[in-house]
Length: 207
Image: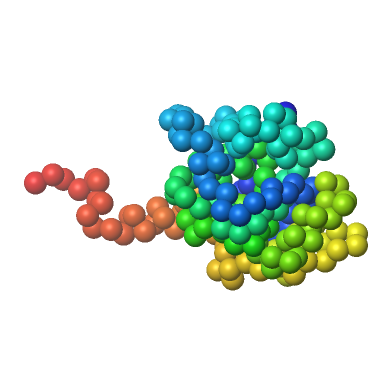
C-alpha cells in the first residue's frame, strides 16, 4: 500500500524521489485508469486502481506492484504517454498512487495540461536518455532530485538536463498552477473587485 496521499499546494521548486519505469510507447489513458472507474464520485480511491487491467494481466509483476517500487514518486515513460481519452482521472489516479513528477519522451497535450493543473510537472528527455535511465541496472534504486528552477535532475552519479515548457515552469515556481490557493491568497482583492461592480450591489433597493 502507498503512503497516505497528500496533494501538492502552492509553489513547487524541487521534487525528490525514487524512480519507477514504465516501458512502452502510446500508453493511453484507458490503460492508466480503465473506463469503468470513471463513475467514481470523487478521485480519492483511484490510486488503488491505476493500471488495473495491466496489473491483473501481469499477475503481480507490473512495475506498480513490485515491492521495490512501493515508495516511488517519479515516473519514467516513453513517447506519447497519456494519449487517447482526455479523462482527467488518469493523472488523478497517478497522483493518488504517489506520483509527483513524470519524465518522458513526449506526452499527449491534454494529458500534459491535466497534469499541470493538479501539480504534476511533466518533463521531457531524448529517447536515448530515457532508454539509458530505464535500462540502467540500478534503475530500481535510482533516486532523483529535480530542480525546477534550473530544469535539472540529479542523482549521485547522474545529471539530466530536463525540458519543460517555460510557461509551465513559471507556474510551478510561482504557485500559479494552484488555482485554489491563488484565489485564497487574493481574497481581499477579489472582494474589493466585487464591491466595485455596479451589477453586484446586493444592498441596493429592488425597483
